Image (tube, rainbow, N blue to C red; front, side, top):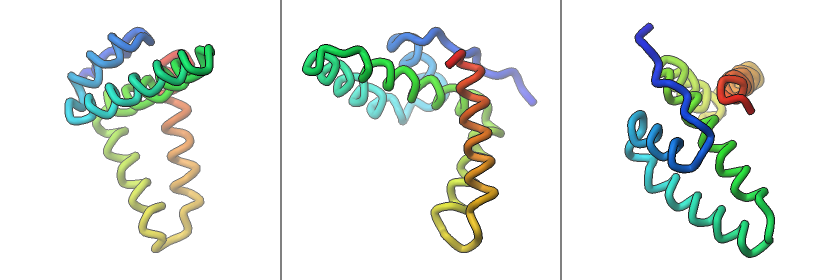
Amino acid sequence: MGQLTPMPELTPDALRAAVDRIAPSRVPALTQHLFEATTNAQRTQSLAPLRAFVHSWAVFVGIERDPSRAQRLRELERVVDTGEQDPSLAIAEIRTIREAAEAEAGL
């Protein structure tokens, strides 16, 4: 396995830079999510939307920075999406992948 992209700090700018490196096509989605989170935080006078943004994108980076893990996640998601077999094992493995990414991000 090659060297993984380092896990960035859990700030919008650092997460954006990491996404730009590992999945540039996702930067528009990150930018839109950040805009919505900021707007909702201001509207509700709560940091919860910004915390959810950071959590979501930190997990995304945690998964995508490891190409083999990202590929496995996509395979598992296809199993769930197609409905051609019992998705229980795939769902459990997806949960494990997400939990590992959360742990690596310090969440």
